[in-house]
Picture (cartoon, rainbow, N blue to C red):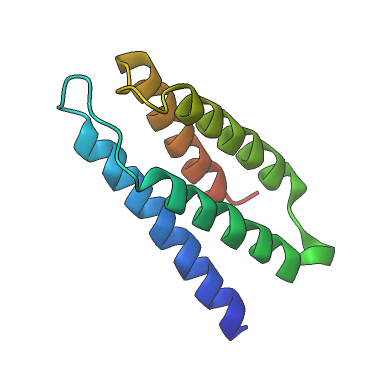
Amino acid sequence: MLLFNFLLLTHFAAFLIYLCRLALLFPVKNPPKDKWGLPLGITILLTGLALVWLKYPVVNYYKVGPKLGLFLVVTVVNAMHDKKPLSKSAYYVLLACTVLAGMIAVTRV
């Protein structure tokens, strides 16, 4: 149980840092890309997979599937804007996917 809680806290912290990073980029016109995206994305992916692995028989696939799809959208958008600043539409897609993933995570069904 201690391992699960540690992974959950790490997952939440990485998600929150990513969301705050996006929020700080909002007022900047054509914000530059920083190097925090890749380590945070890897942390979110690995801790998410570890959380699913620890809860394996009783996994909420109706939550995991859409969140994984949103993660893939965020990955594709970040990969498309790898060497150039984020456009306004790309920023809004990233922010919408991140907030939607958070809302899926806290929704109790």
